[in-house]
Length: 69
Image 1 (cartoon, rainbow, N blue to C red):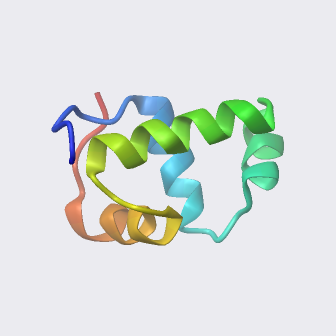
Image 2: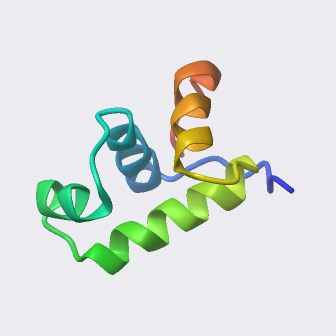
């Protein structure tokens, strides 16, 4: 169930990199953070949006266009 909380700027940035088809490791390297940090941001974005997986989150990013917090 979505929390209806807006994505933070970092969650938004991480989720937007999913649109490029990047793996968690590649996102971590791009943002100069750990792989685990990326996993946490994606997990929180999934929870907030109600998406079940990375693909759904990427599609949500394409269709919802919410602004980051």
